[in-house]
Each structure stands twice: as structure tokens, then as C-alpha cells.
Amino acid sequence: MLIRVESRTDVEASDHVVVYPTIGHLVDDGAAWRIDITGTVYEAGCESRRKRMLLNLLQRAAKVQPTAAEHELFESRIREFIAPTQRGKQVALRVGDRVYQLQRRTKRNGRFAGTVKLSAHELDQLRESGDLRGGVLKLHVLSRDGSESNFSVHAHLLHDEGVSVVSDIDDTIKVSNVHSRRLLLERTFLREFESIDGMSTLYRHWANQGAAFHYVSSSPWQLYTPLAEMCDACEFPWGSFHLRSFRLRDHMLRRLLLIRRKGKAKVIQTLLKTFPRRRFILVGDSGEADAEMYGRLARKRPSQVAAIYIHLLDERSLHGDRAAKAFRGIPESSIRTFRSPDELPTDLSCLTSADSLLVSG
Image (cartoon, rainbow, N blue to C red; front, side):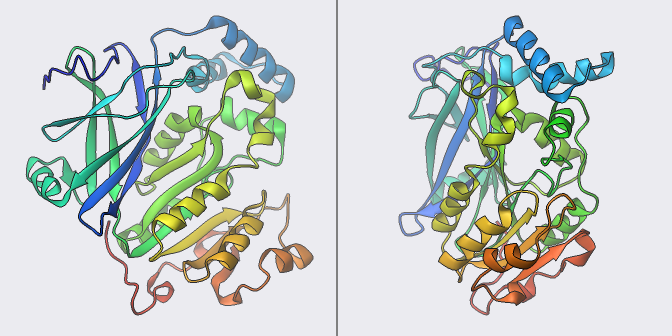
């Protein structure tokens, strides 16, 4: 498809555009849908100086000398950390037969954001065209020459009521060994990503009952592509991704452990605020502060947080005073710790009240 959009976008056909899976929600008393779009534009080429610096840091911090095979994987994992970006690029998306110019141009780190708003009538047309199927809308990125690029984004349109699963990633659905800087760096940059056994099966059971998924992590956005590839390969349900902004010059590789501890609570609070009538299952692990964060959220919004499930790790337990403090004032029936996903319920009907039924997004 070719659309004349020279005045709407200056993204080149050679640019690499990553648009992150998102969600849409009803606004204007149900008359329209709002979809918030975020992504990154990377220019062709790479910065060899940054690549050498990252490799040297990895060797010192992880105390390993990558083999030839590991070096190839390392090259792919750091691609979006070192790829050049440019401030001020305008991004345009095609939705059906309309073109939407996003409101915010790219920042210095290549990140862009904007909003697409669609009426109920427009959605009917998109269903007919095939751009909207099963509650998931496909938006296409356009290039300066008017051609449709190979990049697109999926937005899951979520109704006001239903069940949403907010899932941590590291050591919850993916083996990361966050407790050890050496192992964390190895698993992030030198090993194929490995999922936690049984989690994708459990999540598919929940998805088949209509649950929506939101993958929330303090991992950098630059790791989105391999994380999404792992989720696809392991057949995790589709869901929106919410990762952390990271600038190489600000943090350096060796500070990955420090930035991992911040940012997730704000994302989850936004989801709870956006969907006040949905019921939420919060899934995390005991290795970081998921239990404490989820407990605070449950105390603030008890009618929304239906369950808290914490994956127990040997490296940091969740017993005694820590558990009592984290889950103070929360009904025991809504909290469960587990070592295997088999210990968690597959039937979500017990988590929905009479006036809050599961509905498919």
C-alpha cells in the first residue's frame, strides 16, 4: 500500500522502528477508544565504540570471556543499546484508510509517543477491513516515501470490566537470577532466554477464560525484542509490555541491577486507574520487592486487586516478618506463594464477583 504522507512523517525506509504492544481503553463515556502509542526509531548502522565499551564492561562485571557463539548472541542483544538514534523524527501510523501523525517527535534517545483516538463507527469499518480482529487492532508504521514499512503495532482493546493479569518478567516468567550480578548479566547478554517451566501453560489457561495480560518489568526497553521473541516461542499469551527507559550514557551496563528496583509501581498504578472496574491478578517473585509493592497496591485498591501470587526463590525467602509486613491487612485468601505454577488455580471464576464477569478484550 502506498499513501502520500511526506508532510506527516520523516521516518526513512532504512530506519528500524520498534513499536511496543499496547492497550486501548474507552473514553468519552464509551463513545471512543484511546490508544497510547510508544516506540523507538533507530537509524541504520551501529556505534563500534559503544560496542567495545559494553563488551569490556560485561567481561569485567560477569568475569567471563565470551565464546564465538556467545559473542554472536551478545551482538544481537546489545543492538538496540548501541544503534544510533536521532531527535525530532515524526512518526505516522496507518489505521485502516486513515493516517495518524503522532503528537510527539522522537527524543534524543529515539523514543516517541502519541495517542490515536477512534470512534465506535471507525472500529466497525476496521472490523470489515480486517485490521481489527478478536479485539486486537493492528496499526502500521509509514515511511517518508509513503510506503508501508515492515513495522506495526498491536493494540488490545480492553473493556471496562474483566480480569487483567499484571505479570513481572524476571524470575517470574523468565529465568534471570537477579540476585547475582554475574548470572544476571550472563543470562541477559550471553545465553538464550529461558522461561520458567509451566508459566506459559498457566497463562494460556487464564487467557482462554478471557484474561488480559500486561508484562511489567524494570528491564530496559532495549531488551523488548528478545523478550517478545521468548514470549512468542514459549507461547505466552499476547499482552502489553511496560519496560523501563534506559540511556546508556546515564546508567552504563554495570548499573542494570540498580535500575531494576524502580518504576514498576507507577505503571501498575496507571493500569489500575485506567481500568477501575477490572479485577487484577498481580504475579511476581520473592527475589525483588514485588510482594511489598503488590501489598501496598492491594491496600490502596482492595476492590481491584483480586489476587497476589508470588514465585518463591531460594535466594530470598518470603516468610515470617517480611510476609507479615508485606501483606498486612490483606485477606489471606487472596495471597498465594508458589514454587511451581501447578500450585496456582487455573479457574479464574472464583476471583470474579457477581457484577464483574470475565469478558474477552
